[in-house]
Length: 228
Length: 323
Image (cartoon, rainbow over all chains, first blue to last red; front, side, top):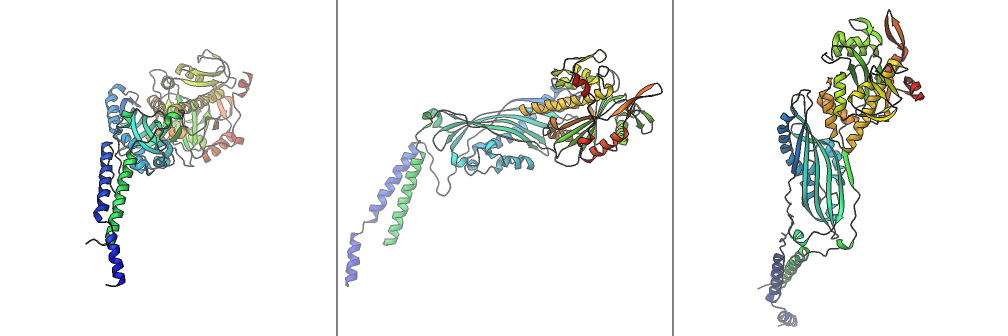
């Protein structure tokens, strides 16, 4: 046996058995997982952390028919106005879900999906006003989470001379509780109106919307522990 | 037998797994709340608005016709006692109103010379359009027509109009009894204000200007209401269409109304074709100033706007100055 071989054999004897390394690691990992699960957290998946999208639907408060024909029976148009509201509401649900609620949108600051129902001109204008119409271009840096609150819609539907719905104005009030990355909370309120016209399907042609954030107290623990 | 490099990899992966899991646990743990220590405050609201306005450089011309039809009469087959060309320049967000005195003695296509207001009696709104086009050389894009009753109902449909009455009025014929100043006129009062002629120093010219003033007042009020509540636009569109006959299709009307939201009432010129009172036989008529009519028409046709040099003096200015 040469000197080198003797040295290598000596080192080999000093190495720690593999089990002494692996076992503690596994134990720590399992313990950590147990703690995580006990706290009700979600186990992240390697390579892509997908936060769930909180469910949200607006409530329709009222739908009013507005006639243009001199001899129109506005009462008779009321059911049609309600039907228009029912038809449009999912579009507004999607708008606010994509603009304020879906983490994959606000974390990336990409709200293209939110403006899917806008006419090209309106969408271009909306893209210039992300801080008003969405959670904002930098929401991923600003917010930790967003929980939708109440959402109420009211419709006014303009009927053409033949009694067909032509234009709808939807008044929106949307609230959400945002937890900012600094640990503070804000009540997010989006209020305003969207004009929609039936252009091979209802499209948003105009809007007048204000977003206001008001710092608020942290929610009670029961609310904080159960994001919807 | 495990090689030393394999052991190192296992150890490294193990450490990463621990770090990942531990990090997740720490990340999922509730963070300390600090909001209670800070005073509550309202962040600056962020506002966004967009309206699909027309932006073409070509002016849009609308002939606004007021019929003198009494209840039971066909508004489109009586006399056109109120005539105004409304010119809109979308690109510049400006507009011009040019009133045509009802007694203007002009050529009516197929009817010879007569008072312009008789054109509707002879051939409905279409002949009025032809007559004005022949007088001015301007191609009119649309017309809109109301009568006494429908005009009054239209104004009531938007809950009245705020009008800055330029001088006191006390006229039994039209029932125009007003103190000067800003006031809300209901449909009946707005009609009286629009009809008052006997009480005006400038007679028919002054009346035509006051009718233009009602239009500017309507724009002012519409814009104010739209700013507060854009949904009010539907009420205005509804009130107009329910009480007027028009060739403006609903789609075009929506475009025009959205465009109106960008036009400042202060940038609307309210003018009246100048002329002089005259007699043809036993009939009192207005002889328009042909040079002024041509100058105004050519200028208006170009871009829907009037150069300052082509804006005629206000017929009511002397009376308003007395107020």
